[in-house]
Length: 345
Image (cartoon, rainbow, N blue to C red; front, side, top):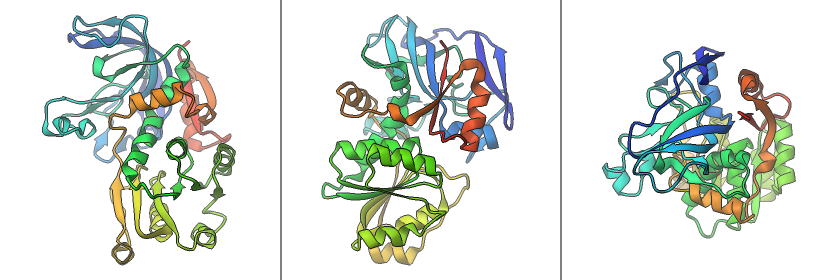
C-alpha cells in the first residue's frame, strides 16, 4: 500500500509499505477515505517535534480521519465490514487509574495515532485501530464531516470543561479549526456573546460569517481595549486556541475577576509565563484542555441532528498524491486556508 512519510524537516515522500494486519481480537482494519491536516501535524512537518515527542524518520503522521471498515477481529462487536467510521486517535489502556476514573485521555499508557514513538499516522491507504477508537457514522454524514469529528470533539470537550453555567460572554483567541470548533460548541450550549481574534483576516471573515459577535486582529488593533470598551466588566472565560504567549497575556487582561482561562493551543516553546499578580488579584482559574475526552459520539450526534454544521471550516481539498502541497499551504497560512482535507478516492 502507499503511505506518506516524513523523511526530514519539511520533507515528505510517497512510499510503498506493508499493509497492516489485524493482530488482536479487537483490531479493526480500516481503508482511509479522508484525512484532515492538523496544526500538530504541521509542527512535526516544520520542526520535527512537539515538546519531547521527536520524529524518528521515516514516520507517517496524521490523526484526523474517516474510513471504511474492511476487516474486524474476532471479538469486535461495535462495527462490521462496510461500516463508515470516524476515528478517535487516542488509544487508552482502559486499565490504569486514569482510565478507571473516567480520564482515558490522560491514560498512563496512552498511545496516539500519528504521534512519534506511539502509532504510525493515518496518511496511509490502510491503518489498524482498536475497536474502541472506531465510531460508526450515519449514512447522512459525509466522510469529510467524519474527519472533522476529531477537531470538533476537542471544541466540545473544551466547552464542557468551562463548567460555568452562568457564562454568557467569552473570548476565543485564534480562529482556526480549533477556535471555530470551540465557537460551534459554545453556541450550541447557548453562550450568547462571543469575541474572536486572529492574525489572519480571512479567518476572521469566516468567524464573522459563522456568527461571531465581534472579530479583531491583534496585529492591527488593541483587542484588549477594543473588547473592554464593549464589555467594561470583561469576559467570563477565554479559550486560547493558538499557542501564543501574547494571546495568553491578552487572555488574562480580558478576563473578569473569577474568570476562567482554557488553554487548547499548543505552543512551539517549552515554557510560557503569566503575570502572577494579575492572576491572583483576579483569582483566575486556568484549565488545560487535553484532546477530546469521551466527546466523539457527542460530536457525531450533533452533526447528525443538524445542531452543529462544521462544513464551512473546510476551505481546501487535495488528492492523496498532493499531500505535501496541502502541508505547504497550511504551513504558510496562504489562500485563506482554515482546514485542508486530503482525499484517497
